[in-house]
Length: 158
Image (cartoon, rainbow, N blue to C red; front, side, top):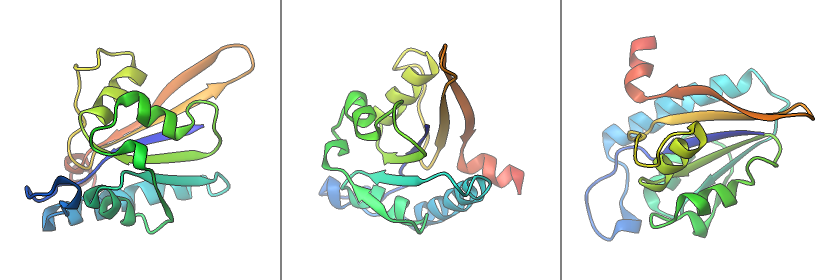
């Protein structure tokens, strides 16, 4: 199974929280990261891809940039814990690729935990994506960080 943790792109600082929408910059960030992710996923076309997102407007808009069906999961709202996010993905027993579009602090805590770091030691910036793979060869399961991409790195690569 592969798991992509994708923090929502930049959103307007308005209320109510669940209705906050992406800014123009956020829409650009989401589109650029979605283009990169789509390119990477195209290299393994036979793998099923499931996209899950929080019910918040900003995560739905970020996920929509992928132009794939999106499952809205109530349990991964902005107040969800890292444990709730992980449970929603089926990690590591699931199949294919799961893209989880979520919020800080839980998404950063989950990324840190999977990387073997202290939960508070790293933070995914807006629109950043961390891509993990769980490999089980029958003897010893292990985890690989396949990629960590940020909007700033996308601009350096182009």
